[in-house]
View 1 (spheres, helix red, strand yellow):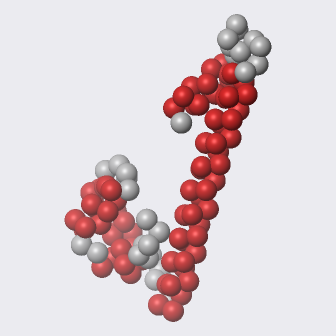
View 2: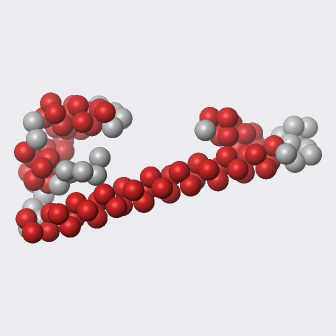
View 3: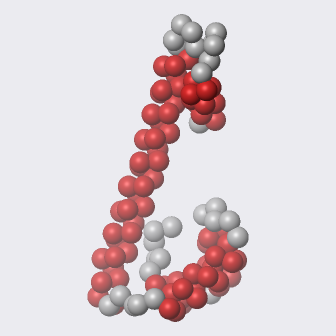
Length: 108
């Protein structure tokens, strides 16, 4: 989603194409969001054309960083749940935190 996502590019896109793109990326109410995005892009200050490529690259890198952090959080939650499940009293009187961790491990 970090590719071709500058103010100029959003404004130029066909609303139906933008809506489909948002829906493919699991955005709720994609039609509504596409309409609002295009309205918003017409109201914001335009970055100079010479900076668009740099800003686009920065957005792509930030998106990758965010995805990596999300993956790390999921892995840590899974490992915490596994360690809690191995403790002697894990299934005798489970605490709310232990139940949450076990549930998270089963979901992931």
